[in-house]
Image (cartoon, rainbow, N blue to C red; front, side, top):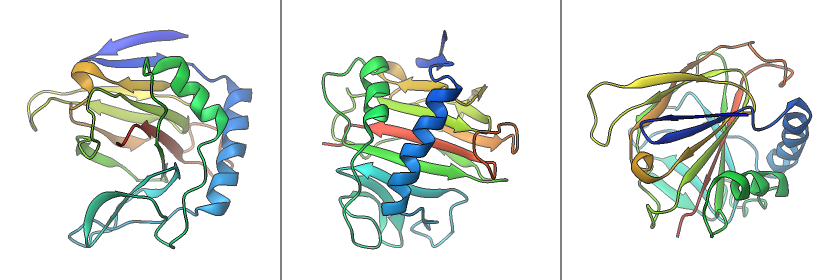
Amino acid sequence: MTVLERRGFVIHQGVLDRAAQESLVANLRGVLAQAPLVQPVTPRGRPMSVRMSAAGRFGWITDRRGYRYSETHPDGQSWPPIPDAVLAIWDTVSGSDRAPESCLINWYGEGARMGLHQDRDEADFGQPVVSVSLGDEGLFRMGNLERGGTTESIWLQSGDVVVMGGEARLRHHGVDRIRFGSSTLLPRGGRINLTLRVVT
């Protein structure tokens, strides 16, 4: 495993081997059977290019009423628990003494992206956000505390884990694009990104 640091983002390359990735995907299929992926819309009514779900006490949702954490899936049911294998990743890399309360599940199909943004809806910015990449490679862009200025990018591969804490906690970040078909982990291609957060 190789550990890189860029602008405070700590990038753990190759945390999960192929067997661990396949096992994690199987766990996520169980989660998504209970809480199906949805294509959310922004408060302005624009469909997002990623499809989303979650596990844990909270999920993060967006619709005409705004961006927010919610204790229920858009269909009204509670979110499934976070799989133990995902919690183990948090315990290994986060450095936090708290357990994550939310595991967001974003699926990127061909052409999907996530614009530069900050994670600001949590109560304690002293707690990190941990991001897990599965499937196709994604071009991860790292920016600044304020919008604009120079950025850096790195291709994240399946099994990589990024920790956003300290100076990186409120830096803008996003995914410019994926290399669709670059991984055989997901039968129909695409990228799954998990982000673990302490919400309260």
